[in-house]
Amino acid sequence: MKRAENRNFEMDYETPINETSRTRQRILGASMELFGARGFHETSLREIAERVGVTKAAVLYHFPGKADILGALVEPMLGDLAAAMANAAAAGPGRARWAAVEGMLDVWLKHRYLLRLNLQDMALATPGPAFARFRDAMLRANALVAGADPGLAERVRAAQAVAMLSDPVVLFADAPVEALRAAVLDGVHRLLDGTAEPAAEPPPPPRSRRGRPAAMSTAMIETARRMHAAGSGAALIAAALGVSRATVYRHLPPAAPPVS
Image (cartoon, rainbow, N blue to C red; front, side, top):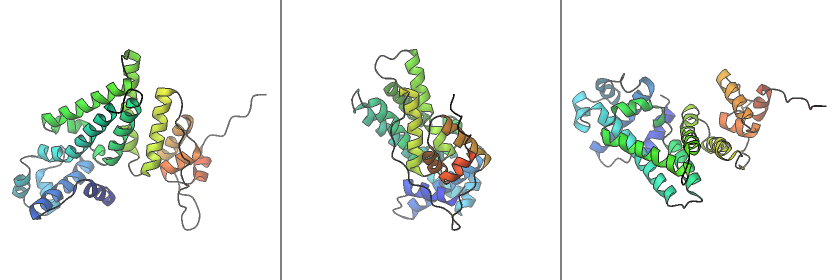
């Protein structure tokens, strides 16, 4: 896993007080890297200990088992998620839907590298109360987004809106956060309201020293075309993918000629 991801983990989680606390945080940091790179079930306690430079017994001193490590990694995200849903519920009927959407998206962005862990691993491996809290927060988010007295169509649309918040954050975790947030909210507004919420024009990404735009991979080209088909402009696509607008324009399909 990239070192930048580990810095993100340290920023969100690490508040060392003494050597015991520092060792605990190093165990969590190493586990985050290994779980993200190999998966929870494929990572052993011995590998975690070797990455930290301690014995397996030292790891077990801080965490009774591997599931407890995952539970400790998930805990800050669960706390933020519960707080976001409580704030959304307190926002009032006219604002609760979008407060829930924006609050959940901000939690996913803050913990975007944790989301790269397999959610099924979280469900199967974390202690029961932790997963129950996650499930309850997701159900509360769905209820807030669906609104008062929703029918089946409204409940399904709310579930779609909540589900579409996490995948882009996982896929584009290294994109500029503000541009990624704007692009995700644009898509949710189109789903729920049929319109896009006006967003500030993002600044163009920096060019290379030679002034030439960065190249785009096949996956990036496909993403750019999907975003364009959904109505996103070239500036927003460029900011989300970290390339120049000229690069985006080169890979978009030509505009259809006007009908005579």
